[in-house]
Length: 186
Image (cartoon, rainbow, N blue to C red):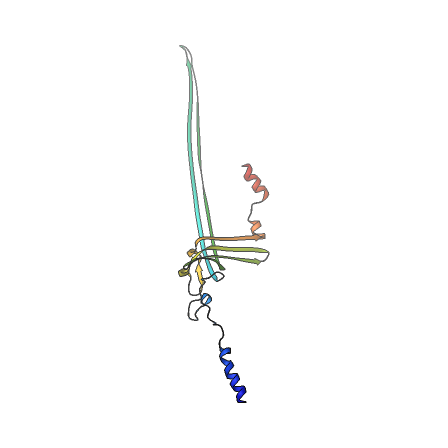
């Protein structure tokens, strides 16, 4: 029995020589922030975008023309005159506004340096035969990411945010065939 115990104790050092569980490249401390920093990490982009534009034009033109003819001799005098006046006043105002509020989770696709990385994300929503596609792309800084791993869209550099819709409602917004035809003619 002692012999078996001695062999067992002699083999224990061999069993204890396992590889390390610590991997420096993928180590994250339990008490550190879990913010996106590496390729493949995710970050939630909070999209709060609003835009408005107003364009105004005013046009006024006036034109006065006058022609007078006259002929006379010692007995008779004949005269004719034509006056013409043209006036045009016109103007227009165009106002557009848009607002997008959404949350899209994006993936880190490229690390630029230790403080900046490229993110891309898409979200497709289908509801009542309407399809909405939201996509976001841009450069993010690690210091702009909050503790809950979110970033506001206004903090993205070179950002591209698209909000596209397809379906019955988006087709109803387009002008009809006759409206487009009259628009081309006039």
